[in-house]
Each structure stands twice: as C-alpha cells, then as structure tokens.
Image (cartoon, rainbow, N blue to C red; front, top):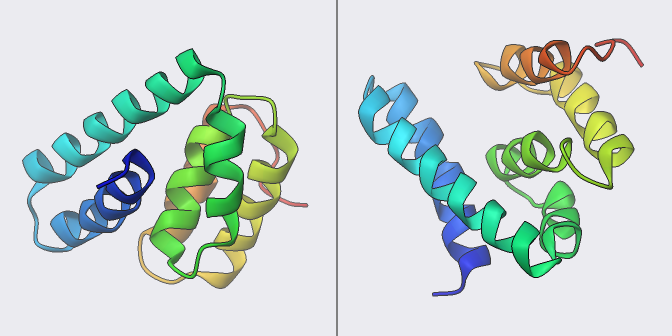
Length: 110
C-alpha cells in the first residue's frame, strides 16, 4: 500500500472510530497520518500529495487533507475546502472544520 492510500484509509477510519466511541483508535489513526505528512514535508512533496485529496469523493479525506495542508504552502485552498465543509457537511465534520479554522485564527465565514 502506498502512503497516500494509507493516509486515505486512516482519514476514513478515524471518523469510524469516533462514531464507535473509540478515541484511542481514532487518535492512533491521526498520529499515523501526522507521521505520513511529516515524511511528505521532509521529501518536499506535501502539497503534491495533499492537493489532489482536497477533491476526493470522501468528505473525511477532504477534511484530513485540508486540516494538514493548512500548515503548508497551499493554505488558501485548504481554507476554502474547510469553509465548504462547514456549510455542506453533517455530523462532526462541520464543527471540526470550524475548529481547525479558529485554531489558525482564520475567519469561518468566506
């Protein structure tokens, strides 16, 4: 499996774990994705790997990609996706996207 495939799988399994009430498993998935992103940063390919995931069919993957990408060169694209997720998503993704923006001191409104 490629790192990109593992990132996608972890992003989706994170939310399954949250829905099942398993924060331990969810946190492990997020830690694994942080390590993958750190490797991409080290290799100079973080934007190349995360940008395509901003349009992934899975809302969970779009959220994860945007939440990580907001710390890197393509910040404006990540912000745009997070704002869309606030409007379009149901469940915990919408407030989570808003929280990511607030943490970075970015307006939730577009």
